[in-house]
Every structure is written in structure tokens, then in C-alpha cells.
Length: 129
Image 1 (cartoon, rainbow, N blue to C red):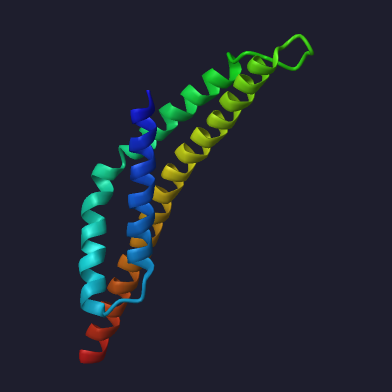
Image 2 (cartoon, rainbow, N blue to C red; image 1 turned 180 degrees about the vertical axis):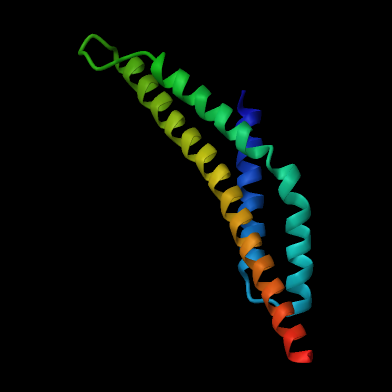
């Protein structure tokens, strides 16, 4: 069961690294190459969003069906187990939300840079005429 969370964490880390690379001030030629790379990986990378949403639904379901240990009837072991599962569910929800958010940021920044390059090309063509 932990493999899916490792995968989602790795995807979030890769998205964050590509996001940093995309937003870094690079020479124009290298910036265009990075933008082309990002545009190529955006469509297959869209699979992250439904996967993250599915994982969020799983976290919600586990959160709703967890052992409730708010009374004094719980032993220290049960209370510790309850708190660990609560922390894990919060961590996993944050991980799924961050993976989807990083994908959205990557998409928006790539779109913005693509629009900027098109505007620069239009200005360049207008100056040549």
C-alpha cells in the first residue's frame, strides 16, 4: 500500500524540480528547450490529477472509518495508533494535494511562457515589417 504514496511523492518532487527549472532565469535558447520538454510531458503527466484525486478519496474514506479514540476507554496503545493514523492521513492528503497543485502550476507557467514567446515573436515580426 505504501508504494502508491512513494510514487505520488516522487511525482510531486519531479514536478517541483521541473517547476523550478522552468521558472529559473535561463538563456533564451535553453529556456525554449525546457519549455518544449515541459509541453511534451504535460499531457501524459495529466494522469497525476485523477490518481491524486483517487488517493484523496481513499484518505477521506480511511479518515471516516478510522477508530475513534476520543473517550477515556482507549488504552495508551490504541490512542497512539489513533494519532499515528491521523498524522498519516494528513500527510497523505497533503501529498496528494501538492502533486495536483504542482501539476496545475506547471501547466499555468508553461502556458504563460508559451504566450510570452508568441508575443515576442509577433513583436519581432512587426519590427521587421
